[in-house]
Length: 146
Image 1 (tube, rainbow, N blue to C red):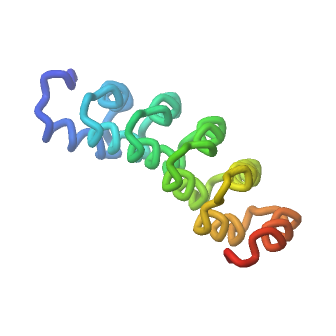
Image 2: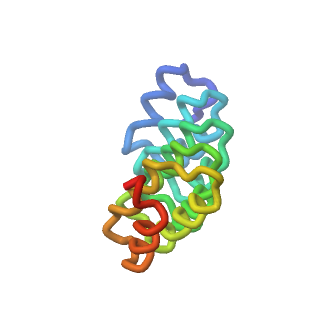
């Protein structure tokens, strides 16, 4: 099934359909339209290596969906920890499948910023996988944000 000769509408339907074959999703991940790549990034059937490629997309919405996708590999999620777009880091912090390693990395990155994002600090503080010692540190340093 060639995606190159398909209409935008057909590609859109394929990109968000969880039964779309992986080889088609791989083709669609290269599409020039950000909205097609956006849907591929959130599709639960998208292969992990393609999610890794999409994590470097120029479009923030595509990277955001990679951060939210429960199938994204930890190494890919770790790459998104230092994304300059705060909203991508926020979505990453809300991913229920992130490890404590990623939570701590997110905290360390926020702490390194001149002005850490208040919402991300709050989400990290409330995350069930946040180690207790990190919770104490956050409360001490950023109590007014909580």
